[in-house]
Length: 175
Image 1 (cartoon, one colour):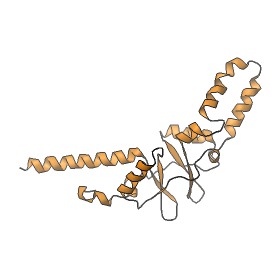
Image 2 (image 1 turned 90 degrees about the horizontal axis):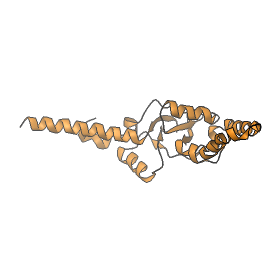
Image 3 (image 1 turned 60 degrees about the vertical axis):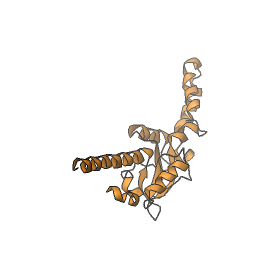
Image 4 (image 1 turned 120 degrees about the vertical axis):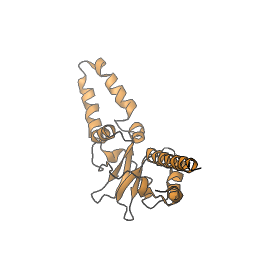
């Protein structure tokens, strides 16, 4: 991408194309493990046609009112040593926690970006929606084609600044 063509940059040019996603019936345990294993902030939730029907993020896992709600989870395990022979209480809580699926905590109305969105539009959406990260990128049919995070935007700007620096040095070296 040439510096003078920066305005022509589209979401598809900076998005991550190999997207890790989940289905609504994926267990929260599996979704959490994917977030951790791939060091992600969120996972698009897709149906069998790869249409985006939601997103599950770290924020959702920390704040939604399920048994996986982190304060509840911490309380459950901190009581483990004090329960003694009342272990069945922990079993009930753990069983309930393990039964939750992505659809129980996902945001079913996620912000989506079309793959044709300009870099200006991408930055504007992230500026307006402070808690949103990442954002699924879809084609005209609503199918998942990529994902954009704040990191992708920063990487893009870093690459552009590095190119600008090289061009500047090259131009000044000729003088």
